[in-house]
Image (cartoon, rainbow, N blue to C red; front, top):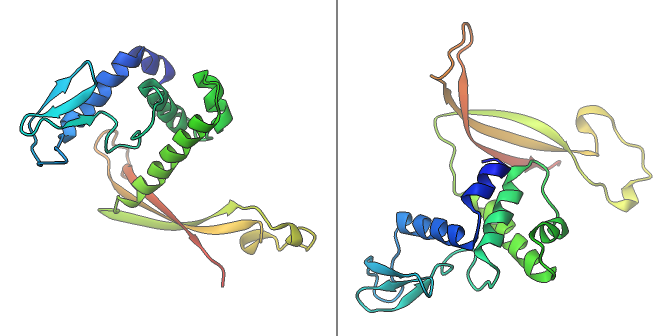
Length: 195
């Protein structure tokens, strides 16, 4: 989704509430008290009410947004900003883009979202054909090691070795002559520590 599509889909707070309500209903809303799956939507209070025991469950309940008072549009816009570029936005830049005065609530929101994004990757297991390779990524060095000469190349102290695993499957969309095309699925990376 590009920026223009995002702005048209989430033009105001109500469109964000509608989207989140549809997502919750698609997964199914279960009452915390009696386990009933039948509910009704109270648009005025923005909550689900159980048809059996009449207990209420807010739209934020059981999500990363629980106990937050920030507008739903802030949450969705921040999710879009965090996932739209390879280089992440700083919390201060997100605060500035949202037009919020205080730094602390925005910082807490960004920390929660980054935590959830990190945990989400652990839920996936690679499936089908898995390809394995290693890569080297530049890392920070401690201050006391900065004066010592560095080894160059593959074993450099400025680089960390990372094992990269990716699932792939043959592609049927754009067949090429010669090599078969592949579609890449999930990717996992683990830092390999030196001994």
